Length: 229
Image (tube, rainbow, N blue to C red; front, top):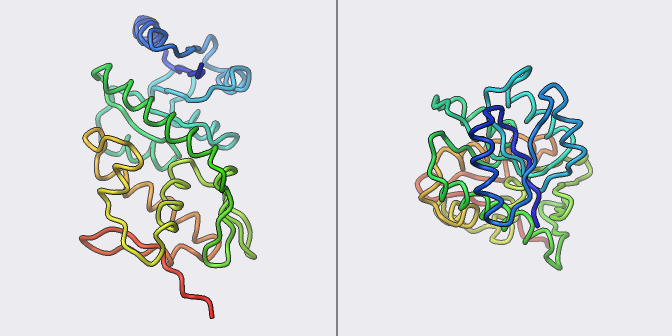
């Protein structure tokens, strides 16, 4: 049974979501003290976090930053705020998706299922180490290492990089990446992929690798690597 941590201060909405999720056999936990979110996160050790933006004490962006500094657990934002910058901010901070209230419960379930399937299925693949541009890609640990150092990726970033290097020197379309990531592209905005790609490039820049993820305008993206001689 997957454990979900629902960081939501609206008790009525929390109880409604919890009841529905438990009907899908998820183990759902809440927050009793919103000044101690990280302590409760550490205690629960959830498989996925669902978090609102507007919370007592500190907002959801603060807690997303704190969680990301300790864990790569998948994070879904669930918020009534509808400004595009809220979604962009949440993704830049390392969230996996953003769902706007009011929402259809089937959409929430679909996103939870797709995220859990994506994260916890590919983590158990037999081959977890790959090489690209003289760097080592550790899929299980979500790290990229080179002579310059090591960077840690979120699950989405690693999934994108893995997908690109599996077809290195070939263009992978945006549509293929979106469908592979979220299973059903109807639930995903095009901007979500752009944010994840930009965030991945920024991290790879620390290893001088960002320039090797090329954008092919109107076609998609390509992980470039020269043939070894």
